[in-house]
Image (cartoon, rainbow, N blue to C red; front, side, top):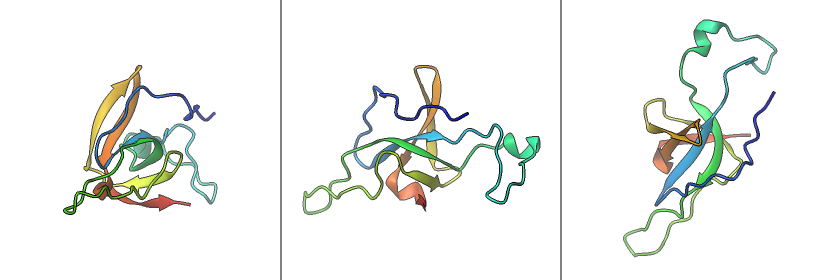
Length: 105
C-alpha cells in the first residue's frame, strides 16, 4: 500500500535544496514483476518522491535560477549526496539539486 505523499509537510527547504520521501522498499517489485529480495531491501534507496522544493539558487547576476524538479516528481539521486532527517516521525532526505541524477518518468 502506498503512503500518502500529498500530506502537508511543515518544512520549506532553502536555496537549491529538495526534500525527498525515500521510496518504501516493502513489497518492492521490478517493472518486469521480479520481487526484490530482503538483502536488497536493507540498502538505502536511491530514489524517492519530491515533497518540497526550495526557491532555487541565486546566480552570479543575483537572479534566482529556477529549480528543475517539482513536487510530486520521482527522482533518482546520488547514493551519498543527502542528509537524513525526521519530520513528524517519518524519514526524509534533503538533497541539493546538483545531487539529483534525473527524473524517473
